[in-house]
Image (cartoon, rainbow, N blue to C red):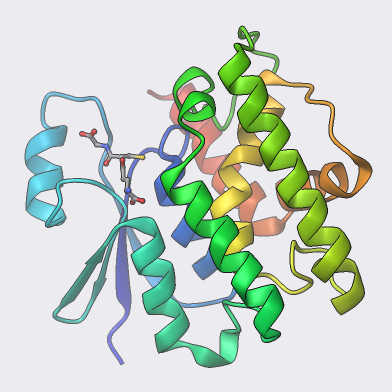
Length: 215
Ligand SMILES: N[C@@H](CCC(=O)N[C@@H](CS)C(=O)NCC(=O)O)C(=O)O
């Protein structure tokens, strides 16, 4: 089996890249990482060369290219069924799929006004009505996932065991750390602390901090 390559953007900035990277690292799926620094004169050409859409992340699995974060996570789920990337319980899985799709297509206010700056903390930002609405919805989602599925199934992740939903929301935890503090219900706050402290998240943070030191 050839090792897969995951093309990613800067660790400080590329929230979409973090999602599949985190899943692969946390679940011990071997891969080689190839980074394209974003917002540089040569970035556009490199991205076009390395990814069919011209965006990162993009997974190279042999002859197959999979672009887009959620498509990569779905591909990994098919490729490594033993890793349990979606919850086994059908109701939990429906909830996790919905929550992941909602992240993928939604929360435009939060994403625009609070961009990921992984290695930065204590940044002050205005919280518009739109951002507050996004935060309230995310807090409710995390709380519902933990209370209905996570706790009862055991394990500290949204649906008990690590799933695609944890990967999809991990960059939001980073944003809350950067621009917060954000007032969260206890189950949501506990999940946020746990995901930020995950060894794979810390490893990504080491890379992000290095980018800040040597831009
Ligand atoms: N829907 C895509 C979004 C990918 C995306 O917007 N990636 C950004 C980096 S986080 C990018 O490649 N930006 C390059 C550019 O704008 O030139 C996904 O889920 O992967």
